[in-house]
Length: 59
View: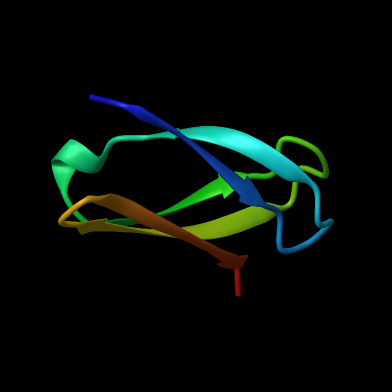
């Protein structure tokens, strides 16, 4: 099942939404910002009550 997550781009600061699949467990992936198109490194962590999505500039 996919969930909608809202996050802030670490490059331009704009907020945007993305779909995440927490049923697959923890994951690291890269997605481009929907506003400035720069790459964002995302870390999905599954926790007891849902998930946590962290976003950093891709290094």
